[in-house]
Length: 202
Image (cartoon, rainbow, N blue to C red; front, top):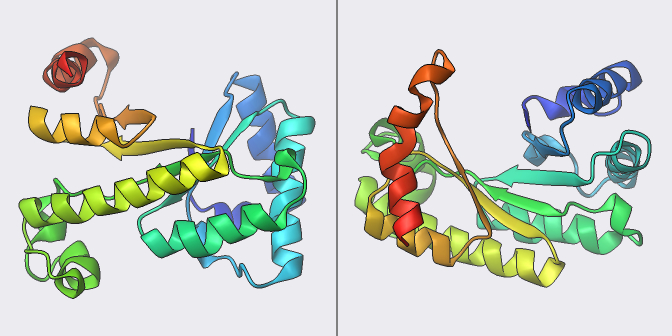
């Protein structure tokens, strides 16, 4: 389960326990945490608070997998790697690295879009879906290598892609979380089968 606004939950015992109880009662075994980039990774007290939450999730609520969701190389190499390396127990560490970079979203990658302005231009990539995919693959390989070194699962959130892109992505990641946003479950298969077919054929 993706947890949005985690920075507003961490440190609030009532919110933490409410979240963890919901996950446990609903039989979730994994939570992927958004908004970690807003935490102060240089603060010992903040990192101890994060560590205590992860330990509580595992030891008191039986949630073995805790993931860090990010969209930049430096997030994983400077923050998550440093955090994990500062911890002595496996129960304190992130064991899933989740890359979310929506290279297929035209409005984000075109000139003036979020990814174009913040990442693609500086990297010398074209501000279109082709340039964004090239950039994304560099991120994916970097994150995947780091996850391997750290003994973590590498995964990526994925929306729209072609078969060739799917094959490249699969080579660099342990797990793909394929989006299937539907109002009800009757159309999930029809919505997803082409993309599932791409992945299965690879």
